[in-house]
Length: 220
Image 1: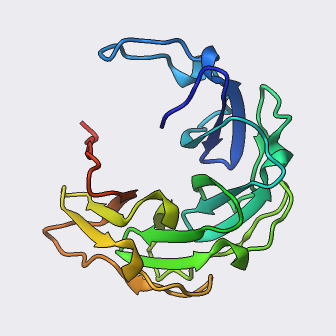
Image 2: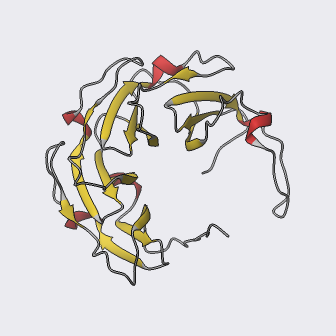
């Protein structure tokens, strides 16, 4: 993502916690440098991993943070609730024992949310379907998942004209954003990618435009 030195950078973790630092607190490095270990910047808890990053200029009263977990739970909270974050972080969403926070986006209460699952299902709904709640709440059902399925991506309709879906065996597919019909939250959604032995499960999704360049990175 793009940021500036005086912008706030919010780090969301798998445990549903959020940490905040200023852009200038991250040391600048060359293109080939390894970078700084996140543990040197944030006081993470044991087994805590960063799963989403947001950059903000200010904590606007009219904007929201929209969060999604792998089990299809979604939550919307006013950004101003995160204006005073301690160095040790604060809880952004309360999770069930086996759930993980996988995505967070800054919104304006007007966006359509797209959730994409590893089995190639997707759902599109307007964020006004989700009532804003405080930091201590658990959220509501955004998508009703089939057995063994989980959400692997969340995107906003305004982020691009197409939705790019990528599978674990390196296959990719691009679909016009307007092909995803608006539904209500909590449904099963529709199939957006056909899973086969050749493709493997979906591992990621991004809203893109025609002129964008894509960089794919493997586990190796």
